Every structure is written in C-alpha cells, then in structure tokens.
Image (tube, rainbow, N blue to C red):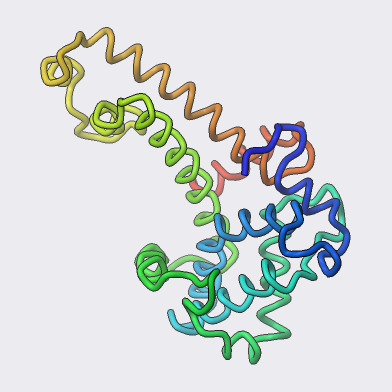
Amino acid sequence: MALPFHTTRWSLVARAGDFAGGGADSPARAALDELVRAYWPALFAFARSRGETSEEAADLVQGFFARAVEKGGLVPRERRARFRSFLLAAFQHFAANEAERAAAVKRGGGERGLALDELAREDELVSSGDEPARAFERRYARRVLERAFTLLREEQAAVGQAARLARLEPHLVGEDGAVPYAELALELGTSAGALKVAVHRLRRRFGELLRAEVAGTLTDPGEVDAELGELMAALAR
C-alpha cells in the first residue's frame, strides 16, 4: 500500500481509535495488516529467545497476528507511538494474558496464516544467546533492511537490471571477498568506473527506500533519523 510520506501506515493506525467499527477494508486495518505482516519475525524471535519452543512461539505469533488484523482492538494509546515499541508491548500483553487462547490458534490456518517454510527460516535466524528484548530489536532492525533491499531488487528488476544488481550486491553491503570492479566490468561489458558510479547510485537509492520504510512505522517524519539510529545500534550490539 503506497502512502504519501506525511500519511504513513502507522499514522493511519494511530488515528484509527477503534477498529471495531472500521470494517475489514478500512485503511487503518489494512495499514496494521501490512505492518504486522512485515514485522512478525521480530515477535517470533522474541518468543523463541524467551524460552518458547518453535511451535509455541509460532502459535503465540499466529494468535497475535490473527487478532491484530482480523479481530481488531489493538490500537496505540499514544498517537505519536512508534510502531516498533507498540508492537513489542502489545505482543507482551497478549502473551501474558491470552497464551491459552493463542495456543489454540493453529499456525498456517486461515487466509492470513504464516507459512511453515517462513517459520522454519525464522527459527534458523534466532540466536540462543540473545535476551528476548535484544532478539526482538535485532530481528526488527534486520527486517527493516530486508524490506528496503527487497524494494530495491524489485525496482532494478523492473528496468531489466536484476542480474547486474545481484553481482553488485556484495559491494553495496561491503562484503569481504567481493569480486573486484575490474573483473566485474569485464563480465558485465562495462568499465570499472561505471560500476562504481552504479554502486554509488544504488546505495543512495537504498538509503531513500530505507528512510521511506522507517517513515511508514512512525507518525512524525521528524523522527526518522532517530529511529534509524536506534535500529543501527540494535544491529551493532
């Protein structure tokens, strides 16, 4: 759902007040649906790091997911709340007070179910050494980056540059062992200088997409830099 910068997904949710009368097709319900779909992996990491088995964590997340986007009732108390903070607080409340009901919700059930392959992949990413809150913050931050990079891949694919991006990705993320520009230039039929310019432009575009993704989880665009700083700090810890 594409939204103007000043009307973010989270600002719609924050203004909704009460989903009960909004209907399944309301903009606020759709916005919350997108956000929960995007960032549920962080909740799974939190539950697993708290000691839940993979199945128990999946059941808790599925129960929260179903309530959030189907039954409503999950709204921020403060309009200027950040989605990241709200998501964890709401999930902790849900897990503490409705674990029994959540355990009865089967993973993958219903139209909005979480796919088993997604859950298996997320389980592999959970570090057993992380405290629950840290696991949540780290996975949330990684998810932000993943979503921005996915958008970059989609944009490049749309203009026929998917293969080039795939070869340049190691340079974009600073991976060790990236193929030297001179060697890539021969492979791609261009010059090393042209590839360096392309990487510079891709990094700049990725930065724009990243900021837009972060903005979608805030009600105040002026908080983007602060939120980005906190997300990068979570990855560095």
